[in-house]
Length: 114
Length: 115
Image (tube, rainbow over all chains, first blue to last red; front, side, top):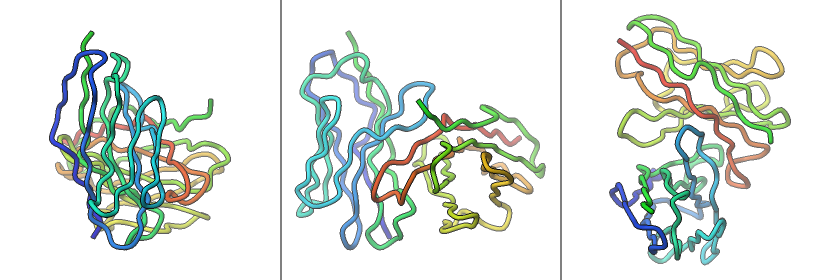
């Protein structure tokens, strides 16, 4: 079945550092890929998405490229801020399952220190 | 800004008791979902609901779980006889269309503790 694997966390960075959170997936067909973010005390929010191979999703300075050849969707940001501290979830939908469910990775806790 | 709201934020119950978790999805959304996250584990899909019926459910969603949309605004998850392993954060979500075509909007979660 579908599965998503994220890099083991937590991740601690200094402000303005470069961020990469790795995400790889297993799915048949052509899933859609997502990054969700959960700020403290809030629900999960969509950060960015990509629906086909080589698409790049971007939002708030974050980027991720849908790489079918490596089955990856790594999240990057060139210069993190303290306000980026949150839990980041990679997810997919579709593939061999119907379009009504998201399959999530483990989540990566990011802490950015001033 | 419209949001998904969930109540209660935290519920403590005894094993074997019935629990109802409540959600108010965004008003013009058509698809509703429940997910859960056991502490330290992944967020897992439980069930999706569309047009007043379950459209998909996971292996976790067995006979002790049920969902209902009792009126035009609420969406509830009932656990008939809670077990220790049901302790988790339960997230409600809604979306205007199928998840692959757009985003899910999540509530803040209801933490269930079964003693």
